Image (tube, rainbow over the protein chains, first blue to last red):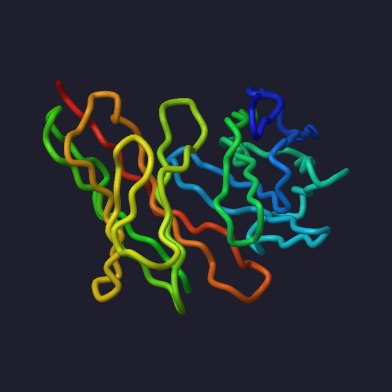
Length: 112
Length: 117
């Protein structure tokens, strides 16, 4: 019973393509997040989503868009993929905006 | 702006010896501080957190951390290291209350812990 799950685990695609990464949490949490981990292992927040309120990190290109069909899901859509988008993307959830965050296993995206 | 510093890229320890992984922070207001561990090709696992109260926080797998407000530090410690503790450790601070970015974690760059038999 994985608490925070992501699909796919690996994603290899060509530049210019559009792709989606799915995230689901079965913890009943109210807040979900997307983080990006680059090749140097540096982690940075991309989005947080709480009670239909989306907070976007201003450094995230608008090619990235999160979509939440319901409280348990926060999917990440990426348009016109670029080489620099290659990274590991982590989804996380927490019971509240200041609660402990629990992370998914990550999606390794490689753009060729 | 809030920030977290992990001054060591790597910490090497012999199995059975005590270990310390350092973390300092800069944040306005009262910080919420966290330690996470990442094993190779895995997600981040929560170890422990400091919100308020006792400065010594105990967490998973025998780890503990000491909050020191005057030194703005939150060092991770373990009395006796195991080879299986070898992993990448991240210190993080949560954005303080108020503002749209409340709750977002700001991570340090990570410290690779290597425990040798």
